[in-house]
Amino acid sequence: MRELRFKRYVMHCVGGIWTRGTLKNLLLAMPYVLHRFIPPFHVLSYLLQHGVPNEFFPDGLLPNGKVQYDAGMSGGCSWKPFEITPEEYEELVLDLLTDPESQFEVLDAPAEVQTYMQWVEWKLNHLK
Image (cartoon, rainbow, N blue to C red):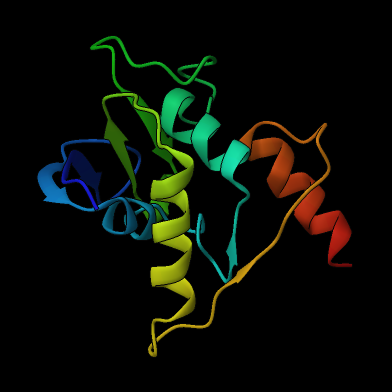
């Protein structure tokens, strides 16, 4: 896996510590993103390119050109937007599914589910 540079936040994307790590490290540093389920390729790709909008940054883009995932009091991350390849996604999935210390599963979604927030909403309704 390629090495990435991203900023980890303790809460509300304030301050933060620059970190280097893999795609797996970045995603695990984002609270709730990989909570048991692995998003499909197109959703994860969208998240990494656009971040997650919030009340302060409605398009997810920060003033410095980075994108962010802010989980409020649970922390978050910011990073330079990037694309992953299907091969990188498959490597990530294999790594997560074979990790003996975790229990992940891929949860695919219908084609109309494109963004991370749409996937979260669909997941919550689907798992009822």
